[in-house]
Amino acid sequence: MLIFPAIDLRQGKCVRLLQGQASKETVYDEDPVAVAIRWEQEGAQWLHLVDLDGAFVGESQQLPVVGEIVKSVSIPVQLGGGIRTLQQIREALNAGVERVILGTVAVSNPELVQQACAAFGWERVVVGIDARDGFVAVKGWQDLSSKHFLAVAGQMQDLGCRRIVFTDTSKDGMLTGPNIQSTAELAEETGMRVIASGGVASLDDLRELRSLESLGVDGVIIGKALYEGKFTLQEAIRVVLE
Image (cartoon, rainbow, N blue to C red):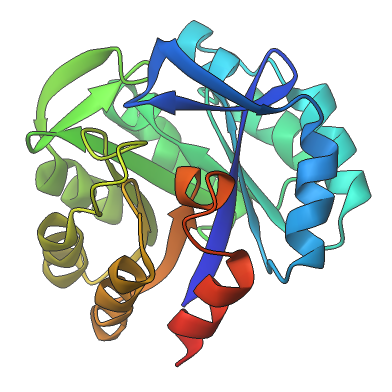
């Protein structure tokens, strides 16, 4: 299982939002490039970047910073937030991003997922499913759709998607533990590979997620717990390799 340290970008800074709410922001570092270098030095094999400005306005806003991060580290980077056209996918990949995450557009324009998977390959195009009370949240989690997360996942699979980043938005930034049940259900029902996100607060949470590896949960994104020192990245990596 891979650990993905999260670097959420807003106005060029490394921040965290509470349940995705722009009004509840904590700035953890003014220099996200330095943060990326630090995570690599501490053993990260991947980085998870989110363009929060892009998620809110529907178009990539932080690509210059993303490009600087990519140049500063030797590990691959995945990027989500505001990527909603083939051209935006191409721009992100050209900036050096290894993998893009499509969120809102998977609900509003599912055909784009099919086109993107065909054009760039499923390993480079991942769908982010952000759910609250079982339903998919869109537009930077500001709106709740009427679509159940399992229905969207099944549709994405039919369109060529093979990997999902799954977030329970009610857990994100709360340090109350991930939604193990829904994460397991998603992996088991679809057979797709799943990266879990949202709520990790302890090494025991990581042990629980690691127990889902046989179902296809092969990664976990960690943000606030690392930034607030609940455990170190090295400790987290050791736990998932036990």
